[in-house]
Image (cartoon, rainbow, N blue to C red; front, side, top):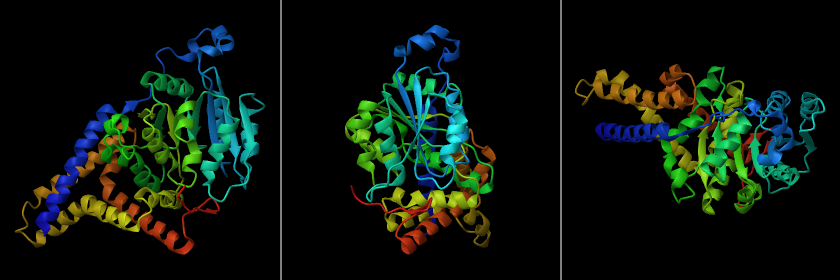
Length: 393
């Protein structure tokens, strides 16, 4: 039995390692345009906006008083000449709207709207994004979160990459800023899951919608593509609207591209263990098709693959006849650390944290338990004062 488990874990880690190495090699990297926008002739910037597609940057904001000022300030400093910033205040209990307006200080690019009442069959963020599109004037739609920090050339780079790749949906992974141990050990696992489990070439060029991923922190649509795939109305009742939108793009045979934006975009999603736990518990069950069985199997798999070799190494001395001990568990540990380390390297995370991958898995197990508790106690995740109930559209 022990030998069979060791072979299974070895095979799983080897497959993950091959996928990770391949993905790291082909993961597109968002870079500033060759000729920075601020070097362009000022006359061109002010009189020839038609040379640059109109862009609408759309921010759904509910209780984002701690983040919205930084987001608005960074977006107003963009070098791209033809864009607008639209913020939808989704019934915030704090002064999100006032802070956004104060940060802009009357700048004509910024428009802040009050959200309409949430319909019964919509998720809050999806409804906010849907409303924003109705106000937007741009032919390129950039959906982003209030906690994303923008370097001055980020919008220029996004538009250039959208055009270079001829993508209909360009989705971007910012660099995740983490300070507390809860953040450091859990937040980077989001992009880890993409790089270690999903062959990016399948997401780009494969015909299967399930071979898709996206990050709601930054999604760039051509407006006709957004409308053709059904937009947020088509995913109105799902928590993982970003992934579902990417799948919808592929379902209508449009072009999806995944990009590493660590050079130009940063985000601090959460601020401590409690917010990390709640944020990931909000999504983890939906990420397993809302199946408690799938979530349980996934949890057992990760415990076996990333915690099991450490237990084997520590307890193997009790059975000196254990085949391959200690070299085999040491090799599996090194392989797991290498996979986590590669994903940290390419996304500008701390390499040292790869050593704590077993603790990361234990924390994710705790998050899974929390999600199950929410489901049993309330019927769904708790988020920003709302209970989330997924339904079929």
